[in-house]
Image (cartoon, rainbow, N blue to C red; front, top):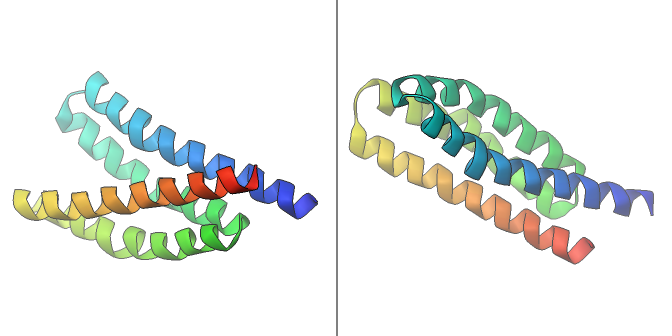
Length: 120
């Protein structure tokens, strides 16, 4: 019973945190600040976001462990590539890489929402 409760709570935390970050925090930054300021601030927040995803998903069931494992390469490989493309002014590469990271995050949100619905 305790493990089931922890799985539900950690999945709810993961789902809510990813949703808030993706649709709230990032959108808020770009609406409240000039892009030249919002972009670097969001860049500094992303490593912490990915650590949050890794940590909370590792607390939940096998689906969440899969999310943790797939977030590691996003944090360690894809995010630095996005930053390099931004720094080099490679707009097309940035758009492609950023789209890939968005798709991964949406898949993680969907997977955690699915698990949360099944556990609840």
